[in-house]
Amino acid sequence: MDLIVMVAAFVLLLSGGIPIAFCLGLSCALYGFLSDIPFIFLAQKMYGGLNSFTLLCIPGFVLAGELMNTGGISERIVRFCNSFIGHIRGGLAQANIVASMIFAGISGSALADTVSLGSVLIPSMKREGYDVEFSCAITASSSTIGPIIPPSTPMIIVGTLTGLSVGKLFMAGVVPGILMGAGQMALTYYLSRKRNYPKGEKTGWKERLVEFKYAFWSLLMTFIILYGILGGLFSPTEASIVACLYGLLVGVFIYRGLSLDNLPRVFINAAITTTGIMVLVGFANCFAWIMMSERVPMLITKLMLSITENKFLILLFINILLLAVGMFMETIAALLTLFPTLLMVATSVGVDPVHFGLIVVLNLVIGLTTPPVGVCMFVACSIGKISLSSFARANLPYLALNIGILMLLTYVPILVLWLPNLVM
Image (cartoon, rainbow, N blue to C red; front, side):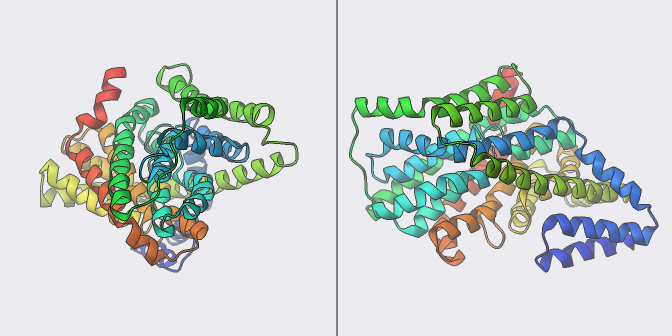
């Protein structure tokens, strides 16, 4: 009965527009009050969820993203991409996608991608003659590549929850991330030709070399992070610190976009973002512990397996569930509350845990661009000053593409597991 009241309170608070972290915390507090569990015990569980060396890389990558945005790195990445592919039909939209793939190798955050690149590219695409709805849709959809290509904040959460190798989870996202980028570029080319979107002037190799020189330090940052993690030079947590130091040095001494005047704002923004994530992680750990103590994961596992033990149908049911959840819950919150339970179901029918981790993350990041609570959708609409309904219509082709890639990766696991098995 106490569990039913807790879940009902959580759903009621969530439907009332209360931030997800407070929904989790208040519902856990209500459970503790009804079941006479000392609140100090819930506080200990909350601290236990945060007391992880792996989670230390989250504030590191958040700060690295803030340093990159303020230091001028994002704009140089966009100009570099546009110099190579801006001359084809819909070239600026193509540059948007490629820039997101490069950006993904630095921040690991879809929201950071949408904010930094969207503020540069959406106004530029409007001036060039692109539909503003299309500009917002391609910016938000390409940003979903961010949590797939390493480093990835959701993958870090998955590794923390399960004890799986974060490095192996990172490598599992490389091929899927490239597939998403290539698929979005192909769709963008088709739509650009159909709608006669503009193309820029072709730049010569001299101009490309100039843009490469300006973007070199930005591109090198991506290489250092990925090679350092995949090559075993440092752990993801150490990589986040390296990224911060590198972004600070490049922003101050090379690009000169960082100064003593704007550094405090950079650190404050990073601290606010990190605090929100960590509070969410702590409360979600309490919520997950209560669910485990009530044996909810085992009950759900038995229920699903009583319907069917077919691996393909189980994966289909899980995909449908997660796509629906992603429409209403933030990615990290959904991972923390649902992943351990669903992992038990998946592994019971023979699904590889690393493969399943990628499937879950991809399901949930698709929700970042869908109503009613997709945060990347909200940011893109705010920058482009369009309605959510206009965005949703323009985003339908990219939503269908991402779901198609999700199904491909779900039922062809070699695309996910080939690289991590080869390297590790």
